[in-house]
Amino acid sequence: MAKMWAGRTDGATEQIADDFNSSIRFDSRMYRQDITGSMNHAAMLAAKGIITQADADALREGLAGILEDIDSGALAIDMTCEDIHMFVEQVLTERLGDVGKRLHTARSRNDQVALDTRLYLREQTQEILSLVKALLEAVVSKAEQYSNAIMPGYTHLQRAQPVTFGHHLMAYAMMLLRDMDRLMDCKRRMNQSPIGCCALAGTTYPIDRRYEASLMGFDGICRNSLDGVSDRDFCVELLSCLAMLMMHLSRFSEEIILWSSWEFKFVELSDAFTTGSSIMPQKKNPDMAELVRGKTGRVYGDLMALLTTLKGLPLAYNKDMQEDKEGVFDAVDTVKMCLQVFAPMVQTMEANLANMKRAAQKGFINATDLADYLVKKGLPFRSAYKISGQLVAYCIRSNTVLEELPLETYKGYSDLFDEDLYSEIDLKTCVEKRISEGGTSTASVLEQIAWVKEQLKEEKA
Ligand code: ARG
Image (cartoon, rainbow, N blue to C red; front, side, top):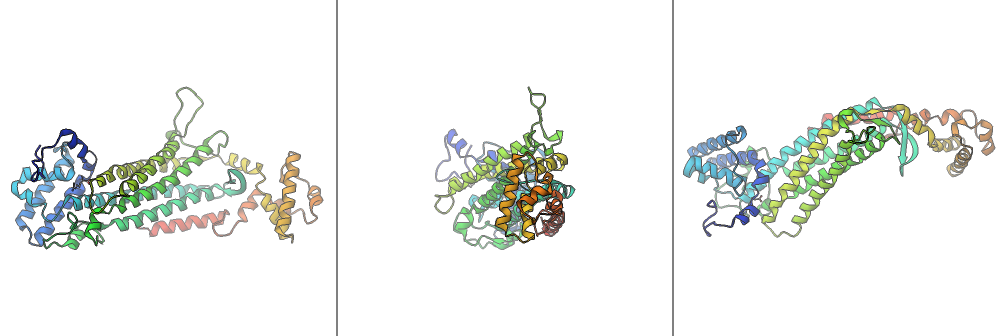
């Protein structure tokens, strides 16, 4: 087919070169943004007297018809076109004749593609924000449900100190809240209009970039035309936010996978979010969580790929930049799928309180509290630490636990020990006494929950 850019050359290229050059396979998903952008461009051109109002009206109507026909399926996108911008302009010209050819005045595909991508990703970022918010709400409501359920807290994956399941879940709530904050910040910088930068240098036509930007809800315009057409920071930033979000989901997944194993059995996932094995009848596999953990790799890959694509590019537009879309679209699709499955998986996850409690009772996780007991009785912490450690060693040798040791054994190690030590090392006490801000006591956890809920009310997301 004759190229729209035929002129200097006759536009006759090899089929294999056309296929290689074409981006319509992946940029056709931006047809709505492309058409909306063009409608607003026509409106600006008419407002500035660059085209007549009658032409602008015809263009608007023609574009609206194309949008409607693509939406309804009446118009199939021609995959032999170079890209979505060419396709829309070609159909417009077929339908309107010469008027259609006026649309591309004071515009280049370079600023057009930058515009479409920003519009598309702005919408996607908003959708992702809503999905993160839904997951965050699910996590918070689980945390509320389990605000005083005792479980072992870990460092080095060794039982360390008792915490509550609610406290543990709220750690993920904090991560997700930061993810939302980052996405909103990213959206703010994304929301600057590149249209009117034209090919690279601006234009001789008396355009009004700010007016055109305001028609599409942008907060402002890109201030340097060379930067406006070659800036893909907004894609990199979004990918980076998504990579970090996936890192959080992946850590959460890893814990859910561990907790679901027979070795832990802290949680039971709903049957609706697990799979069976084709050969082992006893299996209930946490595939959803594993896939989220696995898909984190591809989102990281999308980020690294784009950073690498951009690193050596001279100003302004280079065709390399067409490689921005597949990765960022893939990341957006992947993250949305992960969030959609993660929220109900968390919502329907049940904790096994007895197993959590039992695990907390076994690992001497109240040894710090035993030392703290002696400190409160006047011993320096290092000495108290040592006595507590010796008592743990004694328990291990005698196959018992701190709670079961008789008082006279304690007295053998320090005469500061008294009957009140038992209530002090009770797991419930260990948890409930940690009332420091951000700590694991039920009161502290409820405060964290209230704070996150407050933040969510304030967010405009
Ligand atoms: N399909 C191209 C892209 O995605 C559109 C911009 C093409 N501009 C150009 N001068 N070839 O980057």
